[in-house]
Length: 399
Figure (cartoon, rainbow, N blue to C red):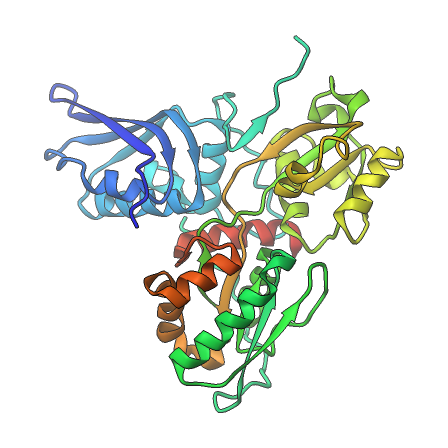
């Protein structure tokens, strides 16, 4: 199924200055590859200038498409330059090492002591990736390299499939999917369903459908292989304050206390990332981990904390009555974090067949029914650079 293209590019060739000016308009997402591949051949000895002034949003899949085109130009010895990058796009280029294509030094290396937000872009235009709510007042980077720990798994063992639910409504859908998977692989697979909010050890399972935080831990510490992800799944953060603080900006909360459900969550990581991007040092905030989001909300309303990090779709699903007394200060729209289907390296020989089984679900009536039961439109393969970007955010705040 073809997705509508989100990006337009207007080009202009100046033979006098030997430049090709490409003005990007719209969103740079997975569909950008089609537009970038259709660009005219760059004339000999001409430089390409990419103008990002009209770009509303860049996500990780779009960065992967852009990196592929920049690498092709580099191999053809074509020089490139990027202009009019807003603050967020500039930072994403640093995070992924994409800036090296524009004359920068080597790609940024991420360690737990690195500061991704120290160097700010020249432009102060805010990206819609982090949307400011209207107020009623005036690199490719390498994954962390660690030695793979010993595994108790054997390829001859019966496969175990551990699933972290996205919602309780998915329960029957996962059991049906597992039955379908066993038939298509002709291999017995036992399934273990982890209820919402439960803490589990995943690294002794052959196949895991994991929350983004757990997925990063499995990839980083146990070398699990990312196979696929739901195409319509993103974890984003809402930063919420009390209604009485609605006139404040995020920088007014220096030293504030923050409630959120758990430290092992991309809601927490994105909340910190967001605060650092807006010049509020997240390391100076005082965090309370409540175990669930509704308890965290109650602490905010009871004035036990000053701020709340909550999953964006959960906050939006609250009734107006439940949101009384709160004010949405900021929210993210990065497309960085999502649930991932992972395979133990012990079973790497099955990577292609399992991936194909998930990608082909939409091809027949049984698969379509399973997708409907799961509330998933379709599965897609995450890009290598997309995974690297997810792990960089993990390594910055969780290790």
